[in-house]
Image 1: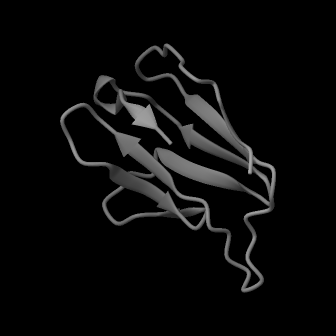
Image 2: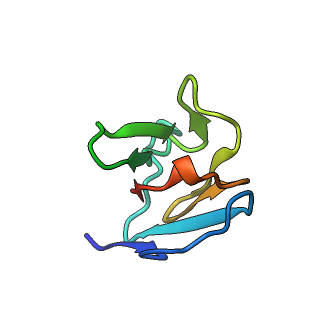
Length: 91
């Protein structure tokens, strides 16, 4: 299967919004009605941190500045106000 995430890298200004998109060649909507797409943040020297699970649910303790949306094959992670501590690899 083909998975595409854009942008690959994006410089952002603190307190500005940011978003990234993900596209799958196959629908991620399960017959049970759940969409099995999760967003994860990886910071240098740290374990991966789950942000969003089964679009659009935020994991416990994740601030509401992070939101996930989408369905089928197209998904977006939005950060409403980026802070310097949000730097990392999102996937």
